[in-house]
Length: 115
Length: 113
Image 1 (cartoon, chains in turn blue, purple):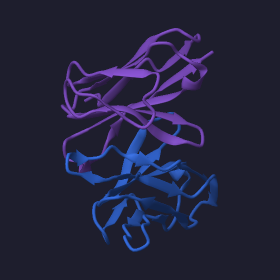
Image 2 (cartoon, rainbow over the protein chains, first blue to last red):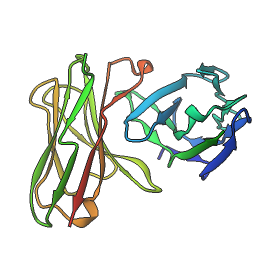
Image 3 (cartoon, each protein chain N blue to C red):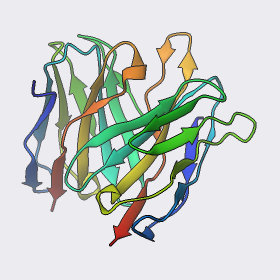
């Protein structure tokens, strides 16, 4: 079945450092890929998405490119801030004749940014 | 616009007790989902619904039942709670076009002792 693997955390960075969180996926069809973010005590929020190969999703300085050849969707940010401290989830939804399948999530990566 | 509202926010149950978690959305979303979040496990899908009156099993449905009698509500029931059901439960909903993303509630923290 479909699955998502993302790098283990926690990740601790200094403010203004470069961030990369790796995500790879396995899917039987043509999935859409997502990054969600969860701040402490809250539900998940959509951060960015990409629906087909070579698409780049971007939001709030974060970027991720859908790489079909490497089945990857790595999250990057050039300069992190303390306010970016959160748990980040990579997710996919595959296409099926009956409609898009429910989101399958990776295990999450906790990011802590220190001033 | 409240979005997705989950009640209760916290609950402690004794083993064998039953309870219902309520999820309500006011965005006229077709699809609704129940996930559980456990440390080191990410989010796992329990049950979901693609419309009023329909439900389907997810990855970890055992020990749970659901109902979607009204479009705006999705109920998750535990008939006989077990300590393994200690978790944080999230409800989510979305439009038919999934590219708008899922809207999540703020979660229900359930402890079974």
